[in-house]
Image 1 (cartoon, helix red, strand yellow):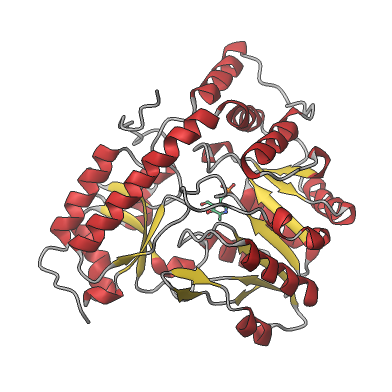
Image 2 (tube, rainbow, N blue to C red; image 1 turned 90 degrees about the vertical axis):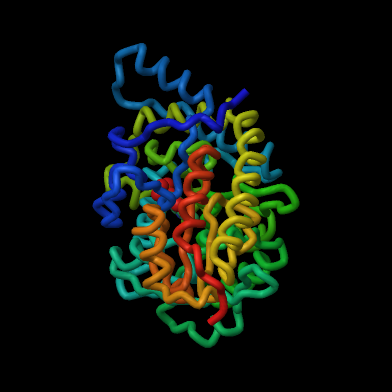
Length: 395
Ligand SMILES: Cc1ncc(COP(=O)(O)O)c(C=O)c1O
């Protein structure tokens, strides 16, 4: 019903993933494969294309009137897929999640304040903190039985009176960790104990593989709802990153007023028509597409993990319970990080996200986006096999 195998030529279409690749990576080969930024090479759900086509067909594209249907569609989706009740009145749209994070920082902290992140962590967290004149407080994740875990005792020792906010990524990027309700509750209690605002970025919540279940922080720890801001979006789930729309869910009216004041101060209280149309249509019509996508991604994950670990003996791909971003540690290959980078970029002509972007703990890692049609994934894996030929593994 949905043809995820279809290879769509994205070069020359203003697709950042493909058209910014040479500039950002220095890989200029015409057949280079983009496996970096988190967008997928699949067509969006047909209902989204139809809604956008209808909009285009009308030919009038004036200011968007928010009648409440967008937040209602989000609330329906969260109830149906995640069993959590979201009051549409608690939803503030923002022009993407990262923009929302910046506005949140401005609303709840002051320049010089510290924001906790759990590295290796999504690189834009680091950038938006620094760009807003706040400071990063790294709470290093530890690997336990092949997955990441938070060390809150270690974090306790690092807190200062300036520590005000926690950026929590659930599920985690990179590493694909689906946090248990107990882990989320422990973090929530920690935030209450130390008077911290908890920002739960759940943009990857729909991209969870079977066997794992995403628990919204709002469900796991309703007792700290007053200090919680949840960020969600349709853009990652349905491959609409260019729509640039996200949502902040804030149940504390005072906190919501503060955030909305920053949104108003930045002139962002009027929303992008095309983004709103696309994302509402996705929530309303995209479920069958998503249900078909997840097994496809899971097969890509299994294929990628098996072949990268065989191609580069000693490499280890973290077992992802969520996301389509394979997180691979090459430390055990015996090949230096520089040589690994060159084999991938120059040998295989593949741009993967460099591990150091994700902060401390990422040095020997690369992140590969496998959300691409299988023929292209096969091509990439074949090239990686050639690029690592002769590597025996071991330090
Ligand atoms: C954890 C996380 N948050 C936010 C984003 C980006 O959100 P947006 O494009 O809405 O700013 C990403 C994209 O990869 C992400 O991984």
